[in-house]
Amino acid sequence: MMLSSLSFAAPAYHGEMEFIQNDGSKFSGHLKGDEYFSWVEDKQGNVIKFNKVSKNYEYAKLQMSQGEVDIVPSGVKVMNAKVPFSPSLSGQNISKEKISEIWKRKKEKVKFHH
Image 1: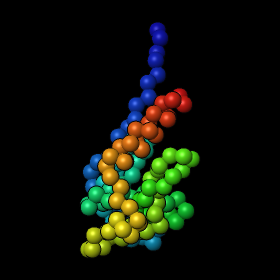
Image 2: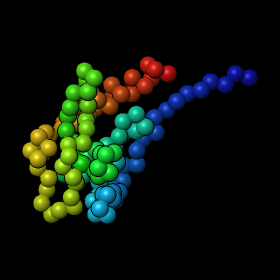
Image 3: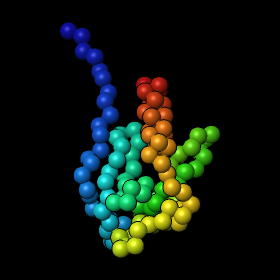
Image 4: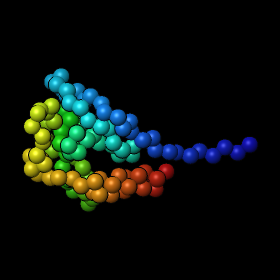
């Protein structure tokens, strides 16, 4: 019997979740993406990435990395405030189209290397 191995990307849980910052503060958001590329969106649709150095979730920004545009933490920590975040704080408003483009590129890159 011949068995074939297929790899599928597991989608992220799309319900609202609570995220905990390094200082114990919390905010609500939705986990997006899959095993190839993931991010968090707040209720206003702002894109959020986890910063491994600060151990905080931060509003994301676009940045060139190895000749390609990528989404990276901006240094602006997500706060559970009543006042909505302004994309001007991180310098960018990241479109759904740009996220989709980056997500697709990351999936293709992983498939190409397997």
